Amino acid sequence: MDATALLNISAILLAFAAFFGWINTRFLNLPMTIGLVLISLAASMGVVALDAVFGLGYAQVAREALNTIDFHDSLMIGMLHLLLFAGALHTDLDNLLRYKFHILLMATLGVVISTAIIGFITYYLVAAFGFEIPLIWCMVFGSLISPTDPVAVLSIIRTLDVPKNLQTKIAGESLFNDGIGVVVFLALVGIATGDTGHGVVEASHGGAVAAHSAVGSFNPGAIVELLFQEVVIGVLIGLVLGYVTFLAMRTIDDYVVEVIMSLALVMGIYALCSYLHASGPLGVVVAGLFIGNHGTRFAMSRVTQEHLEKFWELIDEILNAVLFLLIGFEILVIPFSENLIFLILAIIPIVLLGRTLAVSVPTAFIRSRGGYVEKGAVPVLIWGGLRGGISVALALSLPDFDGKPAVLAMTYGVVIFSIVVQGLTVQRVIAKFVEPAPSK
Picture (cartoon, rainbow, N blue to C red):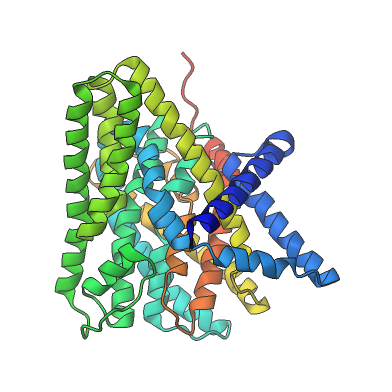
């Protein structure tokens, strides 16, 4: 895509985001992300309906325009690192460390449990609906739909009246489990395609996931190496570059320069992680937590802190608006059929079952070791574990195989249900299961 086409598409998307945002604020008054998804979905289905009645051809024009946008690259390369840094910047590190074991277990063991449960049940479910998808590709679906999406979670949860402790657990898990989920995803795609070496790692950082060179059968050593590269090196890069930026910020007091430095930090982490095949998302989360807590406390004046927070809040809102607008429009390019619609309706409770076990098993372990878990935490963590654009991006990045249309449709259906239904009702779940804080 040349620069002119990129500028034109960006202008169109921002215009739609502004117009639909105005409609939502003026008439619907829903959380912005949910409102944009609903309005863009309605607009997409309206275009399809008009085409069906009058044969205007607008739906095909819209599909061709959307096909010029690589959703995977737009999110995983263009937006995700900025959104994650903005989210981490506003997360209380002290509170996060207080619940570190519960968060860590849900982000690791929980993802693995959910992947296995969803994958195995999906294998038998799709067969019942007349689709043939090998077990390994069903497990891939389980891996891409299991992690909660930090962008969706943080954008919606901050608009709700969520107790601080539960907000920390939901946000903390979502910030870290996508990194683990991507490693599981890459490993399973590698097994499915016969590439468990660097080919899959390179593909994950350069665009679509594909097998560049077959390396033979399943190689556990390659999976361990992948885990080390993605997680450990990504975290170290975030720590080192975050600390260097902190030291530089401490020597000056100029909010313009320090805001630019924070932006350069995110871009630098992405570039270095991409070069070293490490997890950029984990790197920017670690750096964001460091700058948002230690940096604002010891390296910034109050004026700089306010400008930094407002800058990243604005970046967060703009990119979220464009991202959730795209999610609503993607219905035009994802293939659907009558059987697929029924399959989507059947897969939603399966994904919720996987999420239930992903939360319940780690929580039971924490309780068995004498740890404290708040009353009502389990249902809120289950229902508040939203899926979003990352799952759609990973599904779109899959190499072609016979079951890919079904995987795309299931992923999209779960994401829309998660954002709209769960996002709109999670406050009711909180009110039902969580005891209100005593008034002072």
